[in-house]
Image (cartoon, rainbow, N blue to C red; front, side):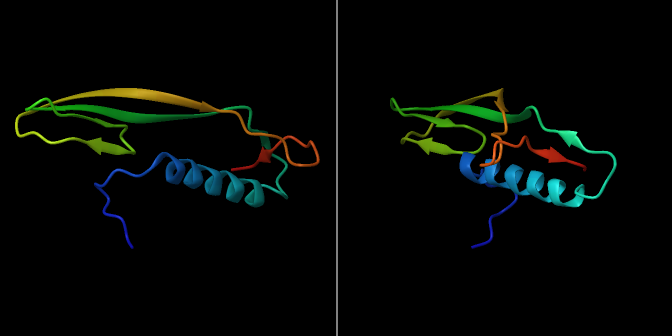
Amino acid sequence: MTQNQSEPIGLAQAIDSIRTELAQAERDGAGSDWRFTVEQVSVEFSVQFHRAGEGGAGLRLGIVEARLGGAVSHDSVHRVQVDLKPAPTQGGIERVVGR
């Protein structure tokens, strides 16, 4: 199923996309003189807190969404930064990219 551009994606899907791009950059840079060690990957997500009438509330982590009933609503959007540190390969070698 193709996902609409405006639909939120899950955290796992977002991190998988980052992982795919980093792996491609590692392959693309394999023969380059200019290579970089990836020490940290910072990812920023929009977080939307949603409150609905009749005691309902929901949480939307810009990537995941959970909601409970209600008709009247109020949204509050915040930004959250997630820092990821790449693990070394199984052989203990640090990841290097050239993109």
